[in-house]
Amino acid sequence: MNQPLEGHDRAVINIAWNPMGHKLTTSDENGLIIVWMLHKGLWFEEMINNRNKSVVRDLQWTADGKLICIAYADGAVIIGSATGSREWGKTLPHRLERVQWSPDARFLVFATAEGTLETFNGHGDPLGPVLLQPEDAPVGSGAEAAAAAGGGGGVRICALDWYDGTGGFEDPSLPTLAIAFENGRLQLMRGHDDAAPLLVDTGMTLTTAKWNPQGTVLAVAGANTSGGGKRHTLRCSSTTAAAATCGT
Image (cartoon, rainbow, N blue to C red; front, side, top):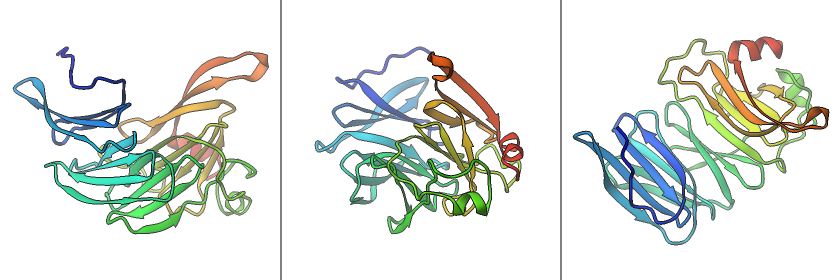
């Protein structure tokens, strides 16, 4: 199939699949959101929404495809169902950049423009910030690295990806939440409340990171500026290799 989807009149900046419901959600520079549905081999507009106040920074479906979280730059958050109803909404006191659901849809984490990571439960109740370690902490794993952390904040979070579990879990003790910082650091966590995350220094200026469908390999991309030059780089690392490198 090769079908152009017409409906946006500005550049599309966000795309989110809902594989369970055969839906595709897109948003553009004007904040217009379109939910597309597949019917008899063709894609059609199912729902259109525009809050007309702020641009959408990120949108993510739950692993079961029942709920979508829409995060706006001005801090507004809207949770909607696959049928189009609004479940809840609130405005956070942060400029938002990214959002991820936990695999069981019980928690949400929001990356802010200030370089912090805020946690909420599925009903929108705040649970507090995640302790971030983007710098000033030794690379490794465990309580020593966590104790040496500088507290986080101030370093841009360039990517946030929480493996949704749809491909199964090879080892429940391995990390599923990946936080990538622009300065090249990775913080790999077993959940939002992991007190001893894996810390990795990629030696790159990072732009993005993404788990594979099985949650066993994390791909990171960015630029390698070592040696006086600038090389655009893509690296992949398995969770077991990262755990071994960090001494778990």
